[in-house]
Image 1: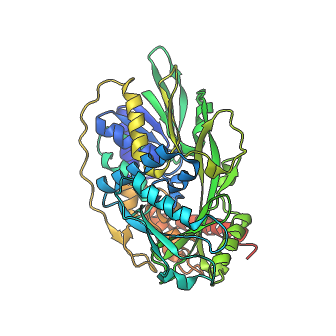
Image 2 (image 1 turned 30 degrees about the vertical axis):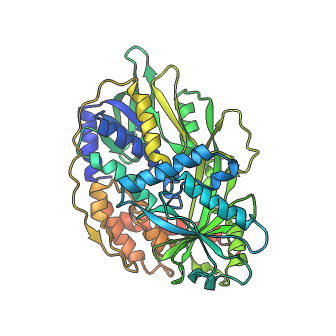
Image 3 (image 1 turned 30 degrees about the horizontal axis):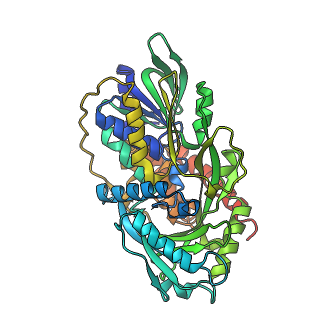
Length: 500
């Protein structure tokens, strides 16, 4: 796959294959660790066997939570740390993370005690050191017209933070400043290799999934930031850890947003002390998520009919509008990696498990494993890894951050917002496939019906032109790629929406 970033990076990789650190996994934690170590002056290699942000980091609610729900576990220290991380991100990245009002809606009958809930929101505000807007009660609000009668008992408004664009583009933000330095980032690359005690280095063969070529490299240290795949990667490289991941599946329905829906709505679920949200995002809204313990990664990234039925049941309990197939624009579904002791058995509701980060250095080899965490805590995770890595790395050199190429814009039919052009994403953002562009470089597949194809596949010719531009002008290959894409979208929708 010919893109300026990738071919230049492979060329530099061939000419100078020695690194201080190799990071496996280009999700939010891997990207932030990469950014932190690059800024410190280390020579860093970032690798992902898929696209950057193609796992859990593209399936979040795009909320920068301070950890409100974890008050239920009396884990006040974790809540305080998450509030601190949230506020730090707002202060340091105002173009990417902004304050947003949320409206908590207690059930009219059942659920949490509304007075206890209001008190908890005030306590939450105190834990955050009064940095956000104070909670307030509102009996009447615009979204009330969307709800059935006697479902909620007023509302409590409080403040959190949200990502301005999307979680996947937020990941790219941490990677792209170092494209023209001695640090290298590569997607669609699979690492293989082993540790050599004689020279105290990891010797890796990096396989490019598009060309099939392999590139030998050496690195003093490896950081495993592969999220839900952390345990699998550790096993493949012979690393044992006292920590492992328990997996929790979270699915959202993406539906058309009502003009009345401006504020993020947080409903008392009435089960497990959990909540369910209606989150405004551009022209759509996210309804969810589910919280389901799963035993395997494979079952965690696919929306099933059971997931949809659960979400529809709770939607129709609360809203007067009945959702139909054509109301479902798309889906979001991913896995939360929750750090647990190695001997943990999956016998608790996932929300009862801690969202704490754990950074686990190997006792013998220069290898660090990253467990758990949330987007909110990505800066703290990166600092923890950098502190642990610095004990085994030589003194770094100063690396200058390269000036960014000016963004080129593109107008996709049916979207009001301008988006990055296919050519720009291909040449400067590692965009290698149509799905990379529709799902992670832009919001097309999340905002336009049928994952960007359109309600009646009217956008198919446009997707073919985009695919051709990404793959270098090969129209026949683009037509085949779009045909595969459309078939996959159709299968997913049919399976998920089969009971509607």
